[in-house]
Length: 196
Figure 1 (spheres, rainbow, N blue to C red):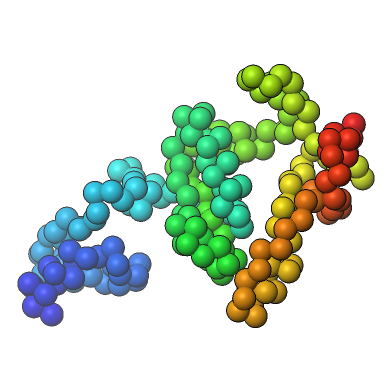
Figure 2: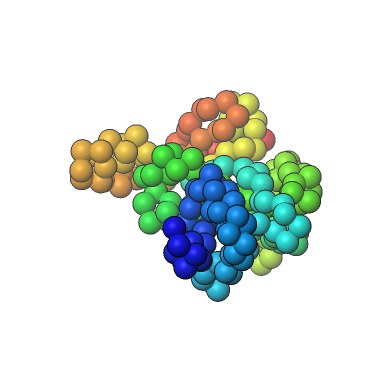
């Protein structure tokens, strides 16, 4: 390639694979050419780049569902830890491809990994003080008494099957699922959700 062609390719080096970037760098140094600054969107997050000291962001967790990823990100940001979600917009546009992409990835800088892991591994509190409502008791699994439960309003097997057929049907149900033992139970009111 001519020098001007190499300079043009170097201007868009971010779109090249890692091996192509190394080859381009070797060609530029062989011809004693300086790489022009890369063209990045000013709105791009810092996590798309390598940090000033050469460190790259670390993927701390992967989430299949966007709400869980947003909660984890919010927990870290509230503690002052800089973090970023990778593939958030792709999953937001089409949640069905989350598994194909490897889920939504939560990334932090290497120096924040230990503190971020500690925050994400904090146990679920049994009670919460809710301003204006008083004390809220977390729902427990009636089988193993775990607090790691979620409310699932969408019947996912039916929704996935209907989407695969080409006619997505959001079939609703009111059920809880325990992530510790896998048990599911219907929500029949406050007595079931607050089993001690």
